[in-house]
Length: 166
Image (tube, rainbow, N blue to C red; front, side, top):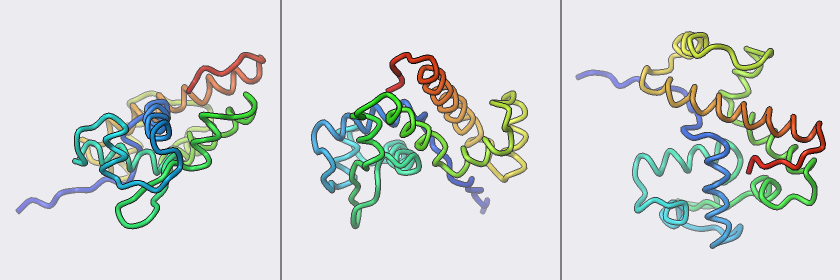
């Protein structure tokens, strides 16, 4: 029997996608504790399955959802700060916090402080960290898109342009 290699945790979707799904959940159930099945339904999935469970896990890693009891989640204050900030600066700060909240993304940001390295460099690094080949592509894609969103948000804030990231 082959042993299945589990990769360390990583967000399976970008922060932008996670915010979009959090907005859908918030629009219906605000910050109430709701069943995971209900949350994935609001997020656009027909059932709680492998793919939709990964989305919920990603949203939890970004800090947009939190566990709220057995098989329940709720939209967090951080998500509300991103969706309904009183100022662009507050929104930008919340986006930056969410972007690098996942432990992998914080680790990559520290490992490569000058920006996003090549995909080959990221792939090599993730292989050394025991990520499976199947997990590397989604992890890299999510990191690059999230990093770009964070950088765009920061650039918009420093130039006085209203952020359109969420």
